Length: 68
Image 1 (tube, helix red, strand yellow):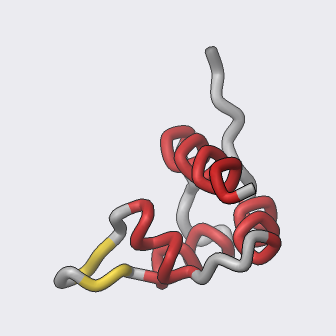
Image 2: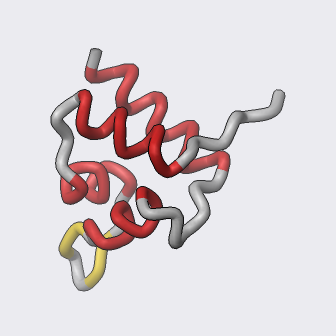
């Protein structure tokens, strides 16, 4: 089964629609620097400066689906 990769704009739209901050999403995805959630990684995804791989796409979709 192939997992559709999430686009930067799709990630940003889903995050905003569910009123989730970049820090909260970074915490969920366990992106941390010195134990602090790294919101800049989420910003890099949303701005297209870092690729959103299939695993991250799937985790984000599951996370946002759970918030419904």
